[in-house]
Length: 346
Image (cartoon, rainbow, N blue to C red; front, side, top):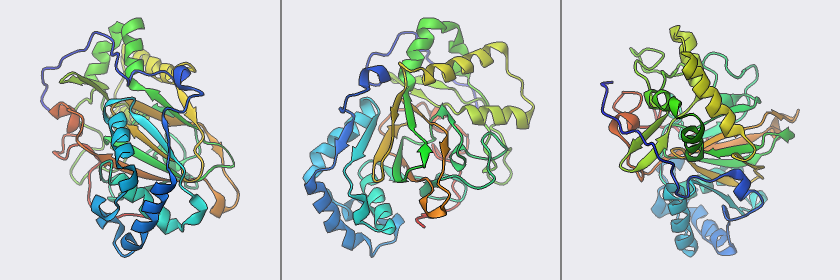
């Protein structure tokens, strides 16, 4: 990827995306509870969408007229406000597993367009542990394990997570403001700015297209400032795996910068924790939020194990520098290389 002129933001961001967990803990302003009228809308839409292939369901097929104004406000909050919301109130035991997938997809159509989450082209993904997978091992993605995850964000505008089943213990969702972390860099370590804007090579986790190298040939910035908006892309594990695969060596300043980001995101005053209940839907703007999860102990019964559904949604609401949007240099914009379009709901 050719180098381009970049604008470095040297002043703190003071908009709503610069929140701190300590200020929101114990409040409910970020929680939206579905009213009875929304459940009636869902029940009216379900018979129609049950006859459709899940990936063919569009917004017009899943109207939610009674909460149209609430959804509009939630989308504004995601795109240009705090950057996250928790949606509660779905009567989980009322619906079949297939219905839950269609409801989650249907609500997602009001927020953005689903994109591929992996090289298999899965559009409705599963977050659950896979036997024998270990965090930080080659080509293993963190969600396939029970380990505590480093704070990171996903390669799309909005990530949605629906809780199907909770773990026996642990598995607490953690989020942090990437904007607040940037402000902390400015306050404590402005010397890291060059590292953040220069970025790192990323491991493609075995999902590169034929003929492509297993790591990005160029560095991907951790932060990008474009048209007055600060955006973040940070996956520590992918950076570490790229260094191992490519024999890359970090400078002392690069190591210190990543250590600072990891520690700041995990700070008690910065992070916000939430325990997702069955039916809860969490939506995060990946440009301004990082997310993580504590380690967990799973149930012995396979039918009871922790299980989340995930959507990656793009809505194009945020202006992004061209080289940051097409960060893997494949001409595909955001989203991993897509070789299919399969929704997995079983």
